Length: 395
Length: 152
Image (cartoon, rainbow over all chains, first blue to last red; front, side, top):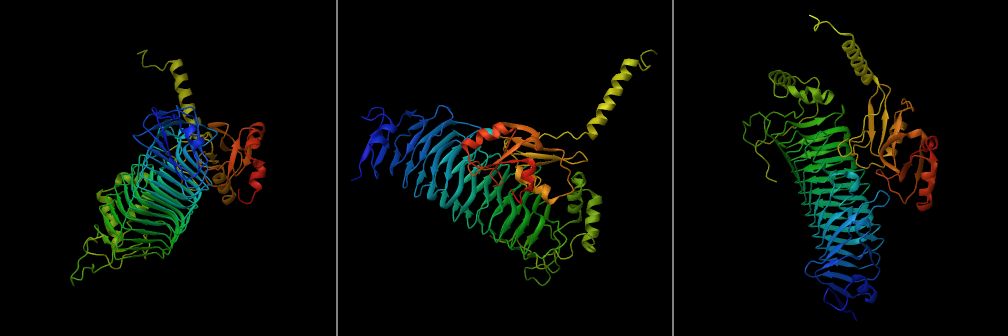
């Protein structure tokens, strides 16, 4: 018979430790408002920890792990967890899940923790509606907001992560979904995949991070309806793809990034119905990129729409809208009558010697770009949109 | 008139300045890593972890920076023309410090994940590495043993 144990300054039990000792599997521990400074809390029973009137679990920056989940089916709901402290030797976490399943962590606020939520060989968990604010001014003192290592079947939704190293970090994580999160002002990446396969992320906002999202050494990643905004800086980009296979990038919006998408080695990726507006470079392919398909995207007012650095190109780039297209549509079928070459000669010069950027928008550059457009000699012959759209595509 | 004549002391200072500028131009001193903004030359990841980064100074004096020791090792494997006398690594026991890679000890332990998944950590000496080995079981390597591994 599951029961509820009340913890609070005016209740019979004053500490979460005591309540956990008394609890059995299936119990709910209802914690009332107040500040609880109990050091590290180990949850080794399948219980629900429910906060009422915003109870605060404070680690007093004593460099401790604050909550460790060491049982299946644990829920932590409605707490503020703060001041975990930092360590060079250990990855300290606000909440750590160790080799357990069926956990739910929701409606919590995690402030000034090194790693906020650390999932280690955990599976079938839900991380929902948490707010995480770190202190990543100095990167060594900060870990990732939501860090998952060797995990399966995670759902990460509706969270807000500020000022951590990476907002959300996946290493060896499979079959997981990241949706409706906001990741801002993180030092490295808003969301970072390493060696992770078969994951999706959708409807997230990535703003003002070192780079929005990095997907590296991963297969079958779906990226849908995300917004990548204002990732500015010499090496910053909205989305960084490195050695990835068979991904889908659909209906995302890239606004005001130094580079919208930087691709270093990718194969069989579909770019469908994305919008690129006011970026320095919309898409920059460096390294070997094969069998990619770029269709029905909008390229609006980017300094450069496309750069492909490899000589060989077998990527398909058809049926996109390019605001830089100046052709006519005499037969009025909505498709421009002459093909469009999105790669400008000047973008080649800039990628060889970045200092040449000062010449952008000069008459000289307009002339060589125009000459190249009429008679291409340096830009790859087959990087061409055969059916440029006359109107912006509604995504 | 006397003011316009180059005074011996001024000449000395000027000469020293010119010499210093020239020396700076051709030194093989490692360019410090800007954590949080520099990018790994091998894997493109932003370098943030002060215990794991590494660097290589080419014979032309150019610094290549890496986010992990495994990226440095992989880069050396893929570019065999690189000479091995100016390699630097961050060590676990003194974060942020760049130490001569050949003099360090290396631990590969699944208990200590490194940025690029090789679980490889550098220590400034054998004692430090051994101390960690007690807490994080694994295997110790010297720099040359590490290079001899197929892929760390």
